[in-house]
Image (cartoon, rainbow, N blue to C red; front, side):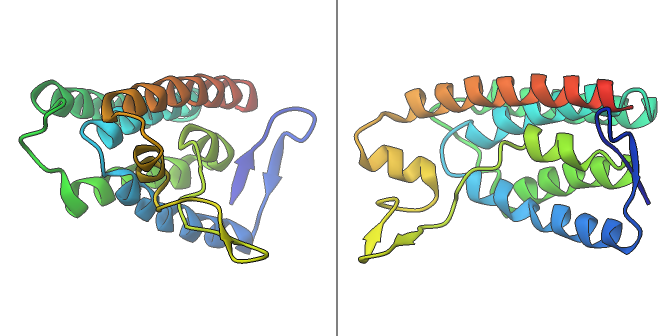
Length: 178
């Protein structure tokens, strides 16, 4: 029921909130499912998130760090055989499993804050602003970028750059928290 946070907070006892936070993290698996829409997008972003979480949980559980590195390797292996133009569809089963594995790493170690950063939480819903103006042309966000005229490889490459930045920061935050 403890969650490590950076100094000066240190270890924080969440009590019953720990279970609620864990439930929320497992519901984030659907966010990974929403990200599965462009060739290689979820595979690369998940691999980078697993690397960030592996670094974050390393001081707490080396076994989970190995698990995360293995999952990152599996995602990279999937990408090697399934880059643009994809021939294999990951689907709900694969993307939901990746999201659940990330949530399980956080739930077992209390590293919720690095998970939120490594996952790169973005707005995936089509938000309606006051005055009936939509924030995105289409949800999820990567389809909005396609409708704006960006090509699929450019969107995926940009997502990789953002995901790598998030993963490095999450790993650093986990290391200083533990």
